[in-house]
Image 1 (cartoon, rainbow, N blue to C red):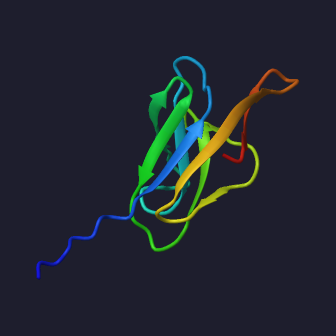
Image 2: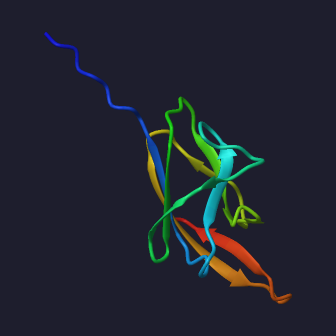
Image 3: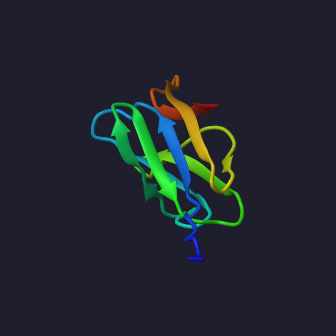
Length: 107
């Protein structure tokens, strides 16, 4: 009997957010391919959708989104189980000072 090759376990995170023309969405965190001090560029997969596929891990990923790898998302860190496909709804709020704050909700 021929051994069956196992498929790699990948984790996919998709964020639905309009980051504005000329901007990009990054993710930082803990887990294979992620760091807290430098973001990983997400791929634009639609007008307001961004995705990233993360490597194999025996534990959950912890992550946050950033616009242009500068502006951090508001709220707590996201936790995504290894092998999970996680969809996150995200939005931009305008503060009274005129700045942009990235917020998020469950997806």
